[in-house]
Image (cartoon, rainbow, N blue to C red):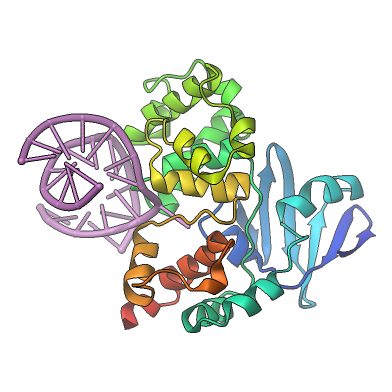
Length: 271
DNA sequence: TTCCAGGCGTATC
DNA sequence: GATACGCATGGA
């Protein structure tokens, strides 16, 4: 990992990293583009402004320090994973080769468990701009993303201001199950993937897709493979017999390249 | 106006 | 176990 201090900023040299592709590709919902090449966001309630420099592959983490960079952001941005190597591996497959070439700057963010779980509960049968709106209202209300402990007294009625529709009662059930001890996110992190899936799906509003998203983005279980309407199209059109072997163990990372590719490249219209 | 969105609960067979 | 349908909201 190559970095140096520059005044109150950290300058990071990092290949295979694009801000638009990583922060605005539907895996996290509260990064906001505040200027050209600049995003503002947060992990837990530690805020960060990050921008790309003119020099290719160099990023500026504004107004932070070395310990936050090493303890928080290096992990959050998954800097210890070699995405160049992953892309070479994926590129054995023709479609994945195109997806990796199309958006080579995608990385999987190592997000907070509760934030990922609750965000993807909100995401169901919803579109990304509206998901961002609902989460934005939630964070505005709580001055940051609320921990589940902060939401213990919420009801579907008290959450009406979110305008999250039928999803509000699902959030309430998730909080209730965690607060009641039926669900322990630390325990889920230690479970094998089958038990983790099964346990998450005891929450109302958490089915196969939301569970996979929570596991991939909140628990960094790279073998989790979320299938939404877009990935259904990917599978139907390119992988009718299943994913290629080169994705084994990191299906979720492959999924993110494919999701972004079919959703934004225009490849879908050409099928 | 109708359709759709990072789906799921429920009823029915 | 599979399939059909309703669900809140808002943009296209």
